[in-house]
Image 1 (cartoon, rainbow, N blue to C red):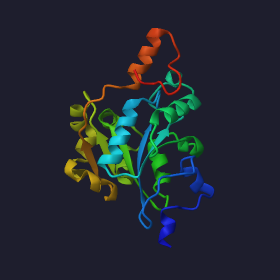
Image 2 (spheres, rainbow, N blue to C red):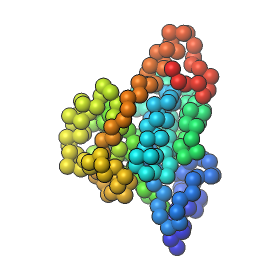
Image 3 (cartoon, rainbow, N blue to C red):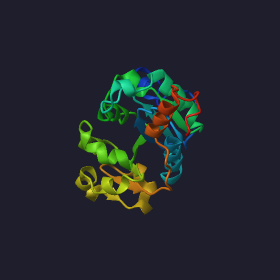
Length: 232
């Protein structure tokens, strides 16, 4: 039955793969739900994450964006991370959008690497996923576990982020998948395209970064602003 595709039964493993809230935005009956995945430490979540997410909803024609808060980033020292529950709470307060949903999927699945999380998510019936990342992460992508496999699993949208964009587009990952790059004018087709495919999305610059926020906290000697006040 086609209608079942857009609302899979929440049982067993399927329940583990869905965000915790039970009120996802409605989608037209019979078509898959288009979901952007923004993964990261969210240490802390900030307006830059929200900015990219809102742009993705609009520019890519997505139904939702899920923030996948990673319990442990393999590329970052554990002592640099805020407690996981705190990062989740801050993300929930920062997103402030009915179509942006914060998820503990990686905690529930016990996955540490993006490729493992995506390998599970793409099995969900009734969904089409797009991986969202900033240009800084595209530059770092060859350091990720089985990074080429990520290109094979889902379409990827790379969002401009100064001053990393030029180096990222000239870097190993972009060059390895140069033939899979779509024109920015075709960005609304990305979610419907079969991987490997990716697009570079130009944005108005947003200077916010989690690193800058943490440095500001350190200068004031505080452990951070109250939940929901993560903007510099």
